Each structure stands twice: as structure tokens, then as C-alpha cells.
Image (cartoon, rainbow over all chains, first blue to last red; front, side, top):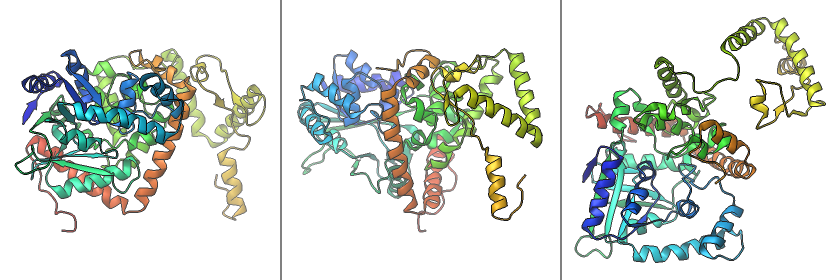
Length: 406
Length: 77
């Protein structure tokens, strides 16, 4: 059992284990924590060949890209993209059939499992009562990584330790339903130590590396809730921002989406390195609504924004307006919104203008004058509907005999 | 790679928004995963599952502080 205070120390510990056992070839099961500490780079710099064995991770390793999703690292690629990659890297014949492509990857990976000296995995849950490291997978690669090579190393964040098997099983249910909608993952692998006498398989040696890497600091700073995360990725799938920009737009980080926007600046030594991320949210609360452990991510994002503002830095983004103009615009908006009659009048005028500029009702505005062109540079702005929500609601109320809602 | 992860944030976002292939892939995957999650959660008492999972995780995180609170009874207890 090893304790690593940061990424560098974890890398040194694992490299030392590898050196001690003469390891030249490592197979890995999908692990966000080893992405966090860039373990592959550390080992490869020492001449050790590292092969990812989760299909998604294997694909992005071949493509030399970072993962773009916590549970589905290759979510940014279409089947056509993967087919091209496999044709180029693995000599596959042209096909986009998922079963055929999986078979090609499986064949390539079998040899890697048989040849590897060391297996490295992350850990979904570490059970204190039994000293068991649990990993959940759908492909069975986790089981091969933890049992076939002669040396096995499990890397776990210090917050992963739960009390008992019952707790791990409960979290497994919550994580699986939230991540993929399955009742259970295909595999739930539990490793409680190296192979013992009489056992048919298992590693000769097992090491566990418990990683802090900023987690204690997160606790001290009052952001304990973010450590509740079980890495299911549900907040990413529900986030309107993530759904538009994907994981790579969050930068060189293992964690993207709403959870990444909170945890990445906190894990960084210097929060300024990821100062934009707390602003990468509309604060709509969709992430909080789907989180299986009820993390209030919008509140944490606001807390981070508050910290950044109090630190005296400039806002991460410029609105494109001079501060005075921005203040005047917001003040005017507040005045208009206060009066029902004024709001209706202005909505009518703006709606008519937007439809005129778009060239008809139901059409999109493809260009707007500055500073609103910041929006239309990369996407279209729908023109306002002829009938507003208030008008529709009012009509509905009249139809159902409930009077005028306004 | 269409999005250069080393580029400044605004550039990364612009690259992502301009990548039609990425948008297609994200639409397909996030729609499917969100739909499957909603169905799986509707099949159980999701509020209870989330409450209990939250409780277990809070206990685990408090353990990191070494000042763990009293753990509530196990499920069904």
C-alpha cells in the first residue's frame, strides 16, 4: 500500500514498482485517476510500453487524443471516424459495422494481455472492511488487467474508500443506472490481494496507490461535496453546454462537463490555470437533477466564480461590450422586465424586427451586429415566435375558462 | 483532432462549435445515454437510491477528514 501526495509522487512510486519487477509492457483498464496524473506519459518516458485496453480508451490512444467524456471517452467520434482510424492503424478492411470493428480491436488486444508484465487499473470503490479494490466494466478487460499480468497496481483517489461491500454495491447500482442506464454492468471485479496458494490465476504481486493530488486541499477549502462524485458522467450527458461543445473544449483535463468545470480548477495548483471553466455553465441545474449523489454543482460553480471575483481578477470572458454599455443594457432590461405592458410592447417590436431581419417567421438570424455577433459567429439565432409564451398562455387560460393569466 | 486542447478556451469552444462531425456524435451519444438513464432511474425508487448513495459517499468523504460522523443504518436496517 502506497500513499502519493501528488501526481509526481504517484508516478515515481509506480515507476519504481515497474523497475523493481523488470516491467517493459503495461496493460491498463480505463481509469480517470491515471489520466489525471498523466501516468502513461510518465511510464512511456521510462521506455515502458503502455496499452489501454478499454475499447474507447484504446481508440483514443491510437488517435493520440485525450478522453472527451468520463465514461465514454470516445463519445466525440462517429463510427465512420473510428473505421478510418482502424483501417490506418490496424489494417482493418473498410467497414463501419460495430461488431466487426470490435472483433478487430479484440484480436489486437488479446496479444497485449498475454504479453504484459504489469496491469494497472483505477478503482471505482475501495472497500475498507475487506481491503478490496472494485472496478466495474462492460468489456471484461478490467478482469484481464487485474488477473493476467504478474504484477497488478490499483490506483485510487483517497475519497474512493467506502466502509463495506453493501456500500460499494449500492454505489454500483447508482453509478450504473446513471452512466449507461443498465441495471448492472456486465462485470464487477473485486481484487483483494495477489494470487494465493491453490488459486488458478491472479497476479503474483499487488500494489495499491492511494492518491491525494489536491483532494485534501479541496476538503480544507470547503468543497467537500465535489469529492462525492462517483464518475458516472450523467451530469455531462444532461448539460446543455457539454452537449454543444464536448469534452475537449474543457482543455487538457481528465474531467470535463459540469463536474470537470468544478474539479479541474480545484485540483490545479493554481486556479487561474482553469479560470474559464467555472463560467462554462448556464447554471440551469440539469447536472444537479441527474447527479446520483446529489452534488449541487451550480452552487459549487457559483462559489468558484465568487472566489475568482474576490481574488480581483478580470472576469474570464469579456461580453464584447464596454462595462458602461453593459451596465446600461442590463439596467434597461431590468426596467423593461418590471412592467408587464412595457415588456409586451418591447417584445412585439423586437419580435417583428427579428423576423424581418431573418427574412420571415420561423427563420434563423445568421448574422447580428456587434456585440451580438459573438453569438452568430458560430451558430444561428432563432427569430422570435409570432405568438409569445405569455400570449399563448393567456389564450389557453381563456379557453379553459380560467380567465386572463396576466 | 478538430479541437486543439492546448488552445485558449474561446478558441477551443469555437473549434468545437464549428465541428459538424463532433455535433453529430455528441447529439447521438448524449441523447441515447440521457434517455437510457431516465428509463433506468424510473424503474426504481430513484430518490431513495440517490439519498442512500449520497449518504454513503458523504460518510466516505468524511472518512478522509478522519472525523467521520455516525453512519446511518445499512439499507433495510
